[in-house]
Image 1 (tube, protein in one colour):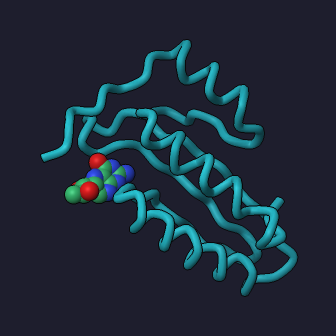
Image 2 (image 1 turned 60 degrees about the vertical axis):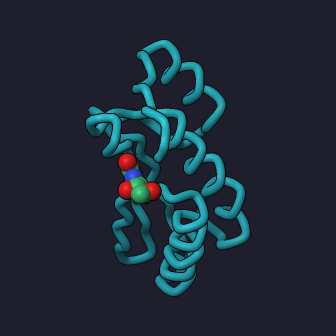
Length: 103
Ligand SMILES: C[C@H](O)[C@H](O)[C@H]1CNC2=NC(N)=NC(=O)C2=N1
């Protein structure tokens, strides 16, 4: 049984966003849009993110477009609010993004 995860407050979200260039809070979603030089690198990053999500047990909505990938995540178990789990996933995604040519 997992512990209750509390939503982050506005100040906490702002402070953590300051450490994550490119990410923003859009409503109750933590978001980032990546651009790529091709469609396949974007698709490969989707698979890599999915592996990380399974490892963490935390899953974003991933929208694959033409040479684009949008990541949007909040925590369902916290009523669809932004929590430290969302920032943890975002940080892991940022680590792998350069290796996929994401910008
Ligand atoms: C049991 C499992 O870990 C939970 O259902 C996880 C799965 N992935 C999840 N992903 C997100 N974004 N929020 C959750 O609350 C969540 N819960």
